[in-house]
Amino acid sequence: MIGTHLAELYLKKGCEVAGISRATSSSRLSNGALPWKHYAGDILDENFLARVWSDYKPELIFHLAAQAYNGLSWEAEDSTYALNIAGARNVFKVTRKTAPDALLIPACSSAEYGIVAPESLPIDEDNTPLHPITPYGVSKACMEMMGHQFCLNYKMRFMFPRLFIHVGPNHPPATALQAFAMQLAAIKLGKLPPIIKVGNLETSRDFVDVRDGVRALDILASKGEVGHIYNICSGTSWTIKESLASLIELSEVKVEVVQDPALFRPSDEQLLLGSPKKMRELGWNPTIPFHQTLKDIFENWLSRLRN
Figure (cartoon, rainbow, N blue to C red):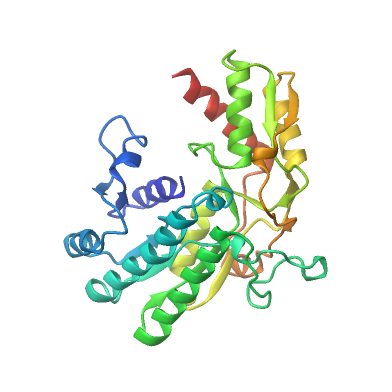
């Protein structure tokens, strides 16, 4: 999701853009030709990456490929660690060999912080220690530390954005808000009975609209400092419960909310709330209200399920 929005932003800026995805995932992005150069392959294949880098000669690399879902990482630990650590290492190694002067920006994550004491909120990227509690969070912390090692030892140019939860249109139903919106859209279209299955509704998250998030990545690439860490967050948190209530109100359907034990995780961060101070100092502020994001997500699911 982030990659497609980011590619569209750079196309509008007049840049030459290329993207990588697995052949199976690229097919869902477009029914026709993609508007940017596309390479179908896997970051676990270092030879494939080397061919792409040699062919395209990138100057700016956003490494977004991952097993990107915190909840799913409990069920897919092996692939989470393989893609997010070994896959990232392949990207870093190939960049070092074939594009050593390129700026490399890997997508780090708020899940690296784990459980943060209330008195330490909002989270400051330079002073809050990392205590990840999920396989996904551990994998992202490892990837980031590896990036620092490449930056320090090989003099490569890295910047490290810690992305808080990015939400917006055209996202798979692998996160709570997307799953809620998909179910509500299906109910409104008469494709599901009026029952919403939910997990833990008591956690709070700092959500960022993906369209604001990619602007932040662009600003970071042009104004950030090499080797530095930046939270990309809104500075405001919403509980999952109130987010669901807003989506239900937007959908204008009456539903029964049912907790499903299968949707609960072994452990969960109670509150993730970041400080966007460093990004604001670079000139970035989120502009899209959370209610508008929810509305766009719901309407996007209505459109996708009608087709």
